[in-house]
Image (cartoon, rainbow, N blue to C red; front, side, top):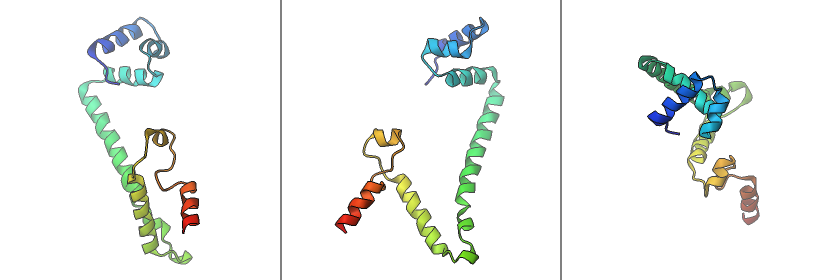
Length: 128
């Protein structure tokens, strides 16, 4: 939700009057965490907000790099795993993650993407 200046001022006034985050959230028809995060963020000075944004970006970037860097952990010499197999599987995963959803329903319910459900695999085995 994009907060307007008026909504922010009203929420801050309600908090100053002693209302809880839950009560304010109910009045604005928002979640408690949305209201709390916004009001806490508003108390920070602009430099602190920018610093926290940079830290959050750095954490997300580091996590993505860490996940990408774990492919070599799947290739141990003692179990006979072929590095090219791991690379192929990781490439397939990337393609699967980029494949489209037919509607928003599977996206919302975290269902498999088009062509990657167990039912799709059964149908392909019957046809093949």
